[in-house]
Length: 234
Image (cartoon, rainbow, N blue to C red; front, side, top):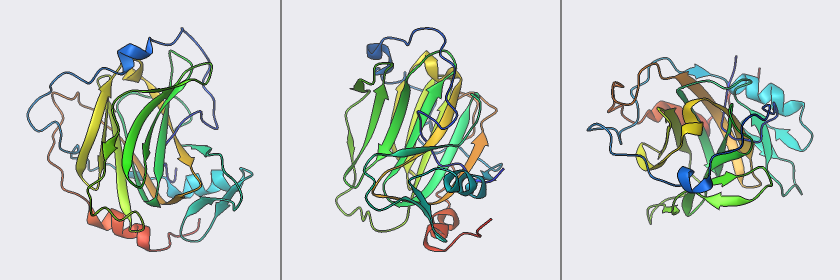
């Protein structure tokens, strides 16, 4: 399987509705304090590059443009389009996306309808939930980017879902977290916005719980550097 960037996700592969969604106020609660070092990215060695798979899916989706170096919206399109990173819900998922401009990863749930998305924008990162009637609710305050953040340069968005906790990092910098029992089993999708240029995507399964996971991984500059080079067109 090739790449996954994600995500995002009222996905191309839509989940089957089950129980009613949890109250949005529950999802907006920050996670409880975790073990020391939990704000460092997980130390992952089993990354699986799914970029090729995502590019193939994008080619079959009207409105998306698959260029040698990136996936983008076709000119004139305003609404984000989703490309599924995972086809079925799973536990303890991590996705990393090399991008310029914007990156959005969406999550959908095995036990509920609606979705949650993390959107890395030019000036800030937001965590929102979209419920079954398409109402958007903020799960936490937006997190501003550093003053010297250059949205025209390559960046990496990393999202990890573990033990009902959703955490995000940009370029190795911890952005924030939210907690909800819906996160125990999720699917992921990559949402391509009008400002997105998604260049590379990889996924991994975290086998340990948050309290057991090894942390302290350093930023993988090679992965981000790949955003500046054209990927192999599979």
